[in-house]
Image (cartoon, rainbow, N blue to C red; front, side):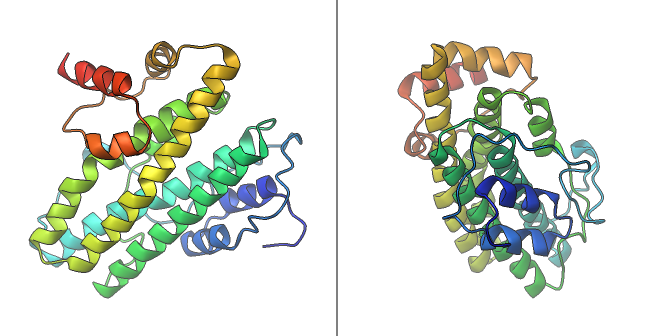
Length: 266
């Protein structure tokens, strides 16, 4: 990426890129050793995030369900996963540029997350190619970015409700999705899911770390403020089954996991 640009400026350039392949390539090319430029306010450009003309974004409930026993159904599942990972590039890029005044380590953490999400997208896109499909061939939804919009004015709400809530749901969903791929003999797809789960545990851990740091800085009780933020911003109610081993590895405390399971049962 252009020499001399700060980490945050590079993240904003990734966010603004509309072409999916170029977005992923830009993300992976970010100079992670660049200065963060944490104190500088950056003006928000129009039209973020940059989005390709395809896929069409529709309401989640209108997405067509296809049988995994068909080539099209198999590709549609991989496409849905690739779409999540492309959104995850944008989510990490957005948190890295948007919130000034955090420690340098905050920006470096989210740049690393962004680069790993870009790798995940490329792995899934290439697997789609092997089936004769490409990203954009199926409709998709906008739920992940919707939560980014709701939390755009508060870094505490963002780290509480995007990595620790929306993305942590991916930890819970991963075993079932992997089993679906194994059931149709897609060993390569299952191996990609293993890479993604390993990395996503780390990404959620980043969210947990900075949520705890921000709560300590603001003198807030993490459990109480998390419950308040989920209500204030309309976060989805989480339902099991939960991947408790992955959540523990990502840094959720026993008290948080008890509250999670109690809320799902209530």
